[in-house]
Image 1: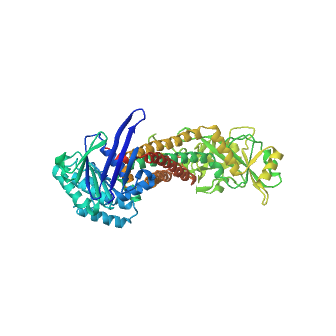
Image 2 (image 1 turned 90 degrees about the horizontal axis):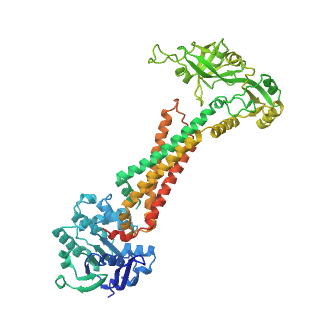
Image 3 (image 1 turned 90 degrees about the vertical axis):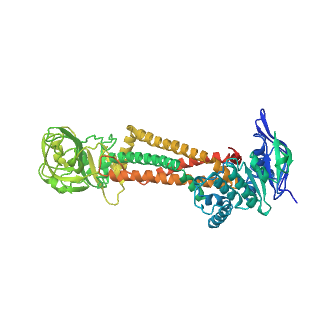
Length: 232
Length: 386
């Protein structure tokens, strides 16, 4: 079976030619479809850069990286944006919900961006919110919700258009232990449905147990990949 | 996405109202200052506007504008009447004469002396009385604004309200007795002096002694004759200048534009209004876009192409521009209604709102371009930054 993500010797450099900062120094990574893969490592080791490359929002400098067999760097900006919109969902540490829109409107955005009629988009968003346990708060604004509830909205937004890959940047770091555990349960229940792939960047050791595999990054490389937290 | 764009805009109430305030202020300043400028310019030709009957205004060729009186000899009237194509020609006196008020103070009046037999050039609208009452002895007609203001009779104490001048009241014009026989409604003039109509012969009596007193000759062109041709003949045969009403208006306005600081003063105000608008709206919208860069980045990451983000911004700026200019012009129009019949020279022809809309469109366009530039350079990677 074709891997969901296949990266070979991926490099990425920031800064000027005179003063370059090597963020990725030849990353090799393979993630299977339907897998929950976690990337862990110290701050500045290149985790966020790697998922940015994987998600198609940052161009690599060297190596090869294919997402569902597609080389995103070879696409023009419009095609890459379309690919991202159809195949990638995002969940962020700071939720990044638009504060002036209701949670239903926030969740409907990926659908509206793909020309789904507004009424249908809203209905599908409401259904998704019911699935993540927010059926009673459909018309509230994000700021009226707790952190855990806002992250549930963000997950609903990431899932509503049924992408094949979800990338998450520290999804539980801003949450307490029990809420973080709830969010991870939700990921396992909803996000992995239908062979969807999850890549989660995290520092939060409390959630390592939910991973199928864990990649340890250091200084711009994946130094090892383990199957359970006890091997770390 | 337009609805989402509008909700993003309106949801940030502070910035939304600041931007609308900026455009409204700009629109108000541009509309109001331009209208006052046009109003002032209109007042310079108010007298010509009130005298529509003659086809040609004949005067000394050195006259630069309608209030620049260079008196002619009375014999010039006969010469003009003798020019081929002139149906009739009548004299008109226009000059400043001091009126002595009941409390002993003086007020300079703009006295108009009309042809005794035809009364051509008389006031356009009578509020009280008839123009033909000027045939009564010592009679004068006073304009309504002056009757209620500058020529009104003072009360017994300085604090007491003035009593408006009414028919039958007496005036003293250059030591001559004058009886008010009518009150007229006239277009306000640039100098805002009281306008007093009387007959030509009586005006000669009121006016200070001078060798020449004929200010203008008002002429009617025979049917079928070309105004320009007749004007050229008058000039050739009498040495006088002859203008149509619109030509004299143009001459007067050009004089004021060229020889007074009015255009530059109002131009500066209008220009400042524009730049204030650019500064307020540009800065606020830029700050609004900066605040929303993270969300625009998320939209881009989720699949929004640049053209979608551009159209969202265009919708946002268009709404701000439309609301702001509407409010600004609305307030300006309200000023126009309130200031009607007041000292404020405010005249808003249709061209001014058009110019205002163009100016506010330009402001929003500049703001949009400025913001789009930021969006073009937007890296969706911003979404992963803390």
